[in-house]
Image (cartoon, rainbow, N blue to C red; front, side, top):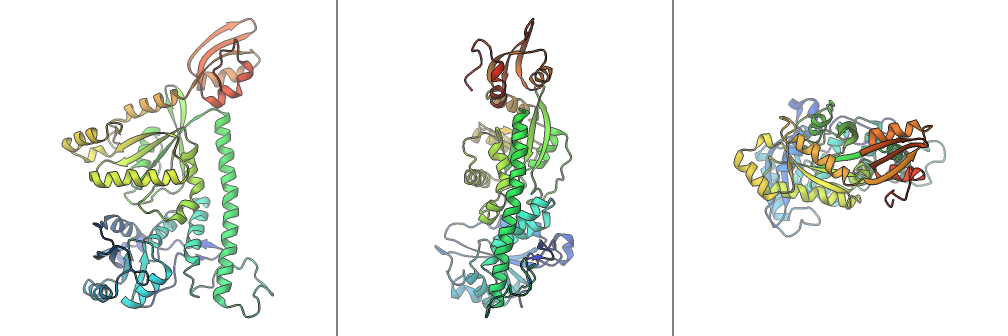
Length: 444
């Protein structure tokens, strides 16, 4: 079976195609391809996550094959003896695509295709395909296209010449330049252009963050494994109606909503979900999205409590690793075990014993949400600094801000202004330091 041209390539005016490269994918489940899942490793290998990725991409799983070895073969992923067995197994289960749980090198992918006579896709390609189908905003589409281009750059074999020629015209191709070299040069040009546009988006997002800081609005970010129920939790806490579906990477674009905690507004942002062995191209491309967690005062690490304990531990570690990679290491964080409505009483008791620091909640039933709100209020209040300010009557807007954002506020009307004692977020305390009296403002 000849490999089709990649449907996830950027087409048209440099925009990624939205059709799944696996037939009609989730748009038409009846057209799904049948995949034989493969993996290599000495330790026990669990392909449950790969099966879930394929389900999200609209691909039926026909079977599995795992080769026990210390490291995958550098040339063909599987050893030569296992390749013939793989070919026979693919025929037996009527598979028409091989799905690998690791990221393949271009040589491994090419040799595997030649050995089994059918299309081979790796974990990264499947995830990129899912992202291409779920991206909604302009920023999300740019991020996905950048990740796809960087992934495909080393895999170009002259299959595609459709990239928009940013420098098209006479003289753009040098003497003797081959088509593949032209494609690579065009891809690099497009990557440069995308990075430039994403840098502009990042600057805009930074401006929005600075504005939030100026208005002194507290921030919290929902981070966690994909499909852990972050969007459902956002809806339950804020009353929003973010789209929720039982599939991986349903939310790619950060969504921010406002909730009230102890009379003060708190901005809660739902970030893109993580996954084990998240491709580095996606970490780089979605850096600006993940920076929402970096700038948040409190990170709510959401985990699916209905998973087995071993899987739950792996999920927590995977998310911690990605957060550390983007620099979220010093932020205050709170572990939140969601979906407790799906576990029995015995498992619930075990979760309390194994994760005493965690909050157990259900976004569906609302159980534990009051405790979560109280914890958010307590954690954010702990970051406030005490101040004593004398605000002139002419600055009434500052008094409004203090009443909306301050905690433990008391006021005394005096002839020369309003004497306010309160606890404020550090940025607001610094901004109002000119009104501090009697040295009562905490060191800021």
